Amino acid sequence: MNRIDGRPRRSLLYIPGNNPGMIQNCAIYGSDGVLLDLEDSISVTEKDAARKLVKHALKTLDFGSVERVVRINGRDTPFFERDLEEIIPARPDAVRIPKIDSPDDIRAADDIITRLEEENGMERGFVRIHAMLETARAIVNASAIASSSPRILGLTIGGQDLAADLGIKITKEGLEMLYARSAVVLAAKAAGLLAFDTVYTDIDDLEGLREQAAMSVALGFSGKAAVHPSQIAVIHEAFRPEEKDVRKAERIVRGAREAEERGLGVVAVDGRMVDAPVVAQARRTLELARLAGMEVETE
Image 1 (cartoon, rainbow, N blue to C red):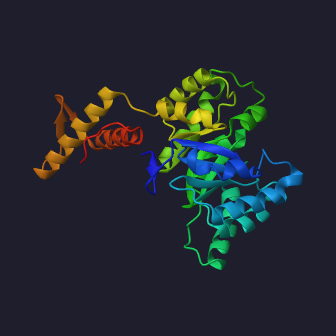
Image 2 (cartoon, rainbow, N blue to C red):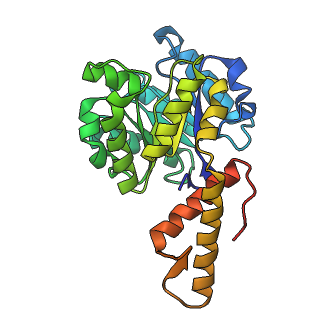
């Protein structure tokens, strides 16, 4: 499903953590979630100010239904623990942790977050983790990372850093990342997690974004990060199912419901037997259709 904890996560918009103008408008961009960034978009000299601004925003602004995720700095930096110490008490929905190479990185973050939740009277496990995989080592360890903590909500691939680590050039088509992207999806889905795709950095090339977002959907990603508000509608359109698929999904779900009411273990739709995974996929299609504003038959 494209939801865990009842939230849609087709699009997650990066917002620089030192930009108060953009932060105060987080609720109106139309993305399902925002990634308040303390890492790459923030210079070393502005880390402290950005951390305080994001903390203040989390505690005072109304984000509406938009999920609030903070991208902190990696464990290999001097900012990692300070970020967690300041941000966790402000109760973000999740933190996105870059440069996750192994389960040890997740466990180190988990220990700190657990302590901070206890110190601040928060429910244990309240703050989830997006594990950002950006190195060849991380891709090889993807399955172990995915199962290293129940706090992990999803895996996400960091395309720019991974390309640098692999020594490859990112192309418009993105085929050079095909194996790594598939590995992240497989590891995430096998662990029951979400999988988030990397950004498309050319904000003037919406057609290129459309093609890459379509590939994201085809590969099984749950959502895709955006670097500009103009990219959100394109990403959402990619996750919008076709009309014929929605109607077929309605027939499958309706047939499953009627079979259950009659005490039958199997159901036939359009002359073909369907099983539980097909019904689950049909429900996912209907959920995406609802998010896209399409009329959908309710169960």
